[in-house]
Image (cartoon, rainbow, N blue to C red; front, top):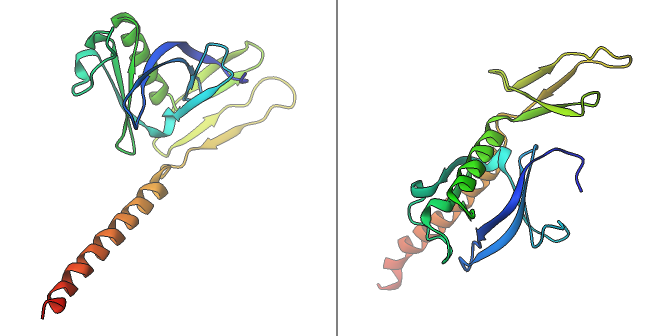
Length: 188
């Protein structure tokens, strides 16, 4: 188990990325933005994990999910589509429309609240918003031995992956163009 608060859990259908099959998974959404998929509700076999704080762009549900066909026994109103920063989507399906909307709101809330503090005296988590400089200032506690903590989130988080992908795409396009430029010499 994790040493963190669980925001939502339950059974969701998840569409696999390669074969586009629907699989029923137990899902846990943790306060740090981790969406974890397990084979059973015992949480022993982790099948897939998505870090929503960094990768989630938007969440749609129900009739907003155009182009996605739900599992056979579920209507379109139960669909949830999570749009990820890399351009892919995570297609999910709840057991009811109400459940779908509840998951959507919780997923969106997780994306919007980037940082949390833990208060051991209350055993609770408190959302702390980022300021314009992507910085969080946490005031010192009243107890002995406490001090101020400053946590800064890198505004360029995930940018390295996008640059690397752009460089690889440019190299592939350049190689293709070079082969076309040499083609007239082979036919002379």
